[in-house]
Image (cartoon, rainbow, N blue to C red):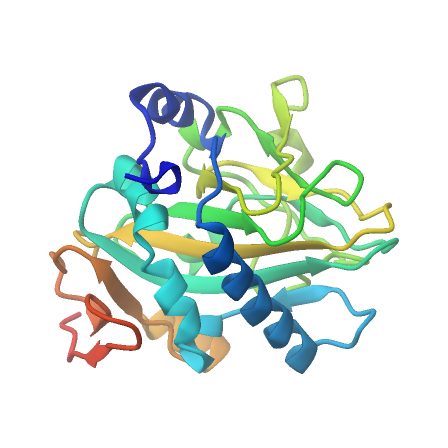
Length: 276
């Protein structure tokens, strides 16, 4: 088995359970396959953003199934299976782009909050993978995590004017209230080498500083869920006026709520009538 295909070790899983975030100890794809992924990412950015424009590109798997083919890679799913089990669904694919010397930041938040607001899942138990298309460093605004913050499942949020915020209000949440942010706890600046990834529990509080470097920072985000969860897309439809379906990428759809089965060869996506 190639090094990139190995699942997480018991020690790595234990660290994830303790801190709510972990960085891979090896590249997540073979070199040639990663280069194909990077090419796809840059083509997508060029189509959607101006050369000097930072931003977030979301739901990429809906418009380009090539992203699902990468989400189905065994090397990625072996890591995710170590954390959430063998029956895996994909719910979103996003790109986070910070151009050089820009002021955009990301306020402290948890991914779980938006899912709770939208009532997308009956339980919020997901793993979020960030693949470094470019090296992610302190200088270019890598993601920062508050270790252990995933153990608290509910947070108070504040209104935020979103000045210079990378996300703005598109996710339906503001920043975590200042009283909830314990900077005396361990804060992890998650520097990720190019081609490696981090994985965090979506209850883990995180944010990022502006990119003060001359290098851009590009992270590709896959969010995976165990398929025993029930999915209800009505809230997403009402808020965003667009669908956000579950895609089965490994194992069995235990909740029978994935709209598409993607188990099989490239671009082999079978539409299913999901029961909600």
